[in-house]
Image 1 (cartoon, rainbow, N blue to C red):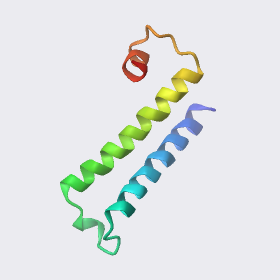
Image 2 (cartoon, one colour):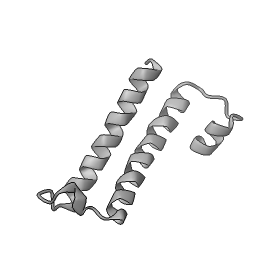
Image 3 (cartoon, one colour):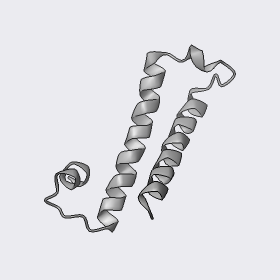
Length: 76
């Protein structure tokens, strides 16, 4: 997968996580301007968490060197 394809894949996965969070929250009939800072933070946490999982899986598939700082953070 090229870096651009990977970015598109991860962005799509993060967007799906945000969508799942919004659906679980309910109140989809309300405008986006009604979201609170807490709502936005929750969406960000879900998107970031999804990125971490996907990146960790990618590093494991690629046999990323264990001594690499990124690998230590994500795989440790």
